[in-house]
Length: 583
Image 1 (tube, rainbow, N blue to C red):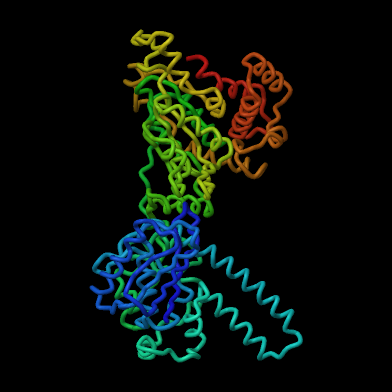
Image 2 (cartoon, rainbow, N blue to C red):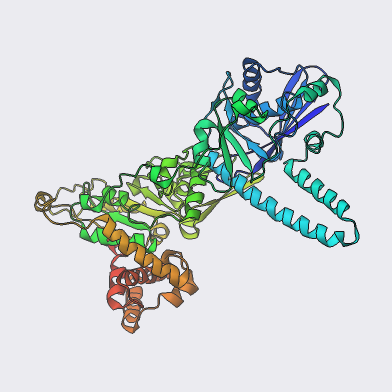
């Protein structure tokens, strides 16, 4: 009886929970079965692994092979488990040195020739490995503390032995008895043909001495190397990896170095100077960037709505280390994927108006993140907003308010972050020319009203800034490039200064303030309070609208460097709630 244990991880929307791959070889009729809730891709691993091992010159055991992917209640998908399954078979069959798999994690899809194909989720897997190492370190410290306390009455030699056994058990990754015995010094001599092969096998690599090691396909290792605290190796194929694990000096793999920020090509970000006119909309865009507010732009075709939305990421402050890790992990585990070239760049997602509810907010079974999660810490741009299915739009209510979305399925629940900044654009009517002085609009009032009613009141109530964009006149277009326009870099500096004031004052952006914090930090002066009360009574605002006006006014004051919003700033914030009512 032979058993090998290999550690890997499953792609689960950035969490990358640990999966223990247990390979058992037993006597009996030859078979190859995989258990542990695998999907179709994982079940197909049997044929890929069999062909890869044979084509690479390894012996495929003619025995009863059972592969268990634990925990059994976690759904497993994709071909990432090909590599750990193949290594487990080789280790259980004595073709790899004992103990070389301990303290290391593996993932990768095998081709029939044994080459390792690129995989999604490499960055998320590295994040999970780093988190697992931190948790393991805390457990070791707790165990060491308890051993010191319990060892006051025993000899030093006994304490040392207990400490070694604890470390060895934890280093094995999943408690595999055969790997643990081999690593402890091969105390029990193996029996049978497998035992003979083990005795002939080279000593192999020693256990990792500085943190966990992660082995991935060569084309996927660069993104994982961005995660600190994890040593990442990239292997081109199965024979090269096995030679490295066997300790062959001429076949040693080198750790992958993390790409430096200077080596990442700079993004050709669009600039505000390219937008003709629309000074009022540019002002609203600056306020939205400074306070993290949602923005709705209403205007005719060609007014510049999409151009303005595309320039919002360039106004936002750079990502912190933690934000960059979270965003990259979400993208890496999704079907979108992550590239090191987009490191520290805020996501800008632009789903088509034909998108389904599952595509926009998440769905499927097991649950997968939607566009609102992929835009976490970035911008979600919904162009032609009324053309989206109303049912789909209504599903945005809760995540826009809470910054998270929970998707429940039978026996399974997933909680995804969704703290994105919504920017939406729409025409004032189906033809797009309602209110144009030329009289080009052919929509009746009933048709225009029906068009606007596709947006429910509760959804519009959650959008802080609502701006009407006029059509550009021929004179404005003729003067393009002749008038100096403010560049995005200048606006971004003001936005960064306003954000710094918010973080120093309350630790978050103004848009994230709760009711109690809004009363504390956003209270205007006496004249502003009177103006706000009159506007609330006249326009019949909800409590949500009232507080959102206060938060927008607080952002305007932060841009101006004022300690308290005044009446003029309250008045500007009120105007940003009126655009859709005036269409």
